[in-house]
Image 1 (cartoon, each protein chain N blue to C red):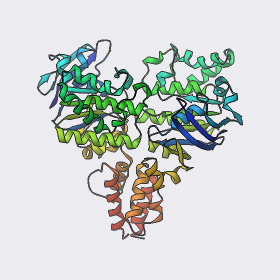
Image 2 (cartoon, helix red, strand yellow):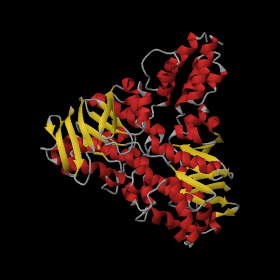
Image 3 (tube, rainbow over the protein chains, first blue to last red):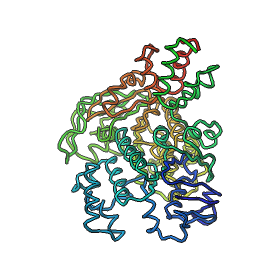
Image 4 (cartoon, rainbow over the protein chains, first blue to last red):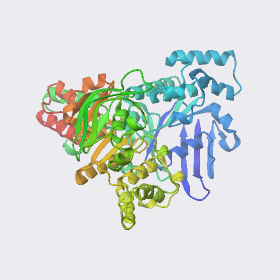
Length: 277
Length: 283
């Protein structure tokens, strides 16, 4: 569990980039942080994994303030996937990269080797491949796999799909969803609202260093005031449904409430089949 | 006009051509969006426009590529860079200055823009990107999104005939991404500048591009108006390109016999179609 209690933060000691932020990430959550560039999302992630300490308030990981924990202690509980995998990858082969985390934690040995073997098989990696010669999506998966290998109870993903093509994006996100289904807490910063709508169960919207909304995904993504304040654009199917709700008097509930292409198409086909409401 | 004629290219270290038999004309003032799966050859296509190939990355170059009638193989990189402004995918590799103002000035001074014109050009470019307040900010204090806007401003300030942008909004939030695309579309229209954008954000390309190009395995599979390309959603999906959800929705309604018009390219058009479906059903 990660708790933010009235947290403020600054990089230079003067300009507050996070202002009095409070929320709790519960075990097993799948939370997406949304908002404009500079809203404080990435700063929040850095506070959650201890790379940055609050200037006011406190951040607690499993009840312990991050100010009392070493970064390495937090890293065992909170894995962090950087937006750019090239900032994370540092070894000359896929296998070395996957073993690197174990070595840093002083856990190299047969168990670590076996876990790396399992990860290589699961992701279908070529263990001898040179990471920098892999395409962007595979490098992103490798960076994610090297975090997963250490089995942290929580993973933080900073814009995990940026620059990926559709197939790569699906592969990364399906891996993340599977992790979450197995109990891993997932916290993600994401600008792709289709990905947020498809995968996140909860959305925290931020603007100007403050949380402006925190709730179930589509409750937040349908809140006009929040969309405006945080400059968030809802997923397209939701946007169409919201538009119909506004434009069509007595719009059928199944149409107005739809959030996916499937839901909206089925609702419209149902209305058409009935020949009207 | 950017013209590819029977163009193929194979990097010197490569084992197979990265691009094959490309013939494509991009008219002046056209906003051309290029997309496709990773490794399909999209970026190489842009390198052929700005002369990065064959001038920086040598290889086997077949056919021809011309920009404003200038052959990119025969022209020098200096001549080409006066015609074609480029923004790299990796913004950090493009930044050469410590402060935003210096970053904008760098290109203007190096291209010999008259001194009296420079302040106006700097202001115009920063205003176009909505970042006037960043003028005196150190580059290393900027977010990724802010850096992308600075990189775009530094190129726009040079007023090139063509802009080539490789994922120019990769690190921008949705509202800023849309603002950049809207700006680029207007810029192309008002200045007659040809804008070529490689992008994975298919919804933005569909909404703003005049010409949508789908590259797959080194070849152009589709090059047409977005409505025409997006009508082929199943084929696009097989190529690793997912249509915008609004398009997918309307294509599905069409499949169900509830709509008989062309593919749609944005939320507003999809909403119109759905409203008509409801009206037709008596809603």
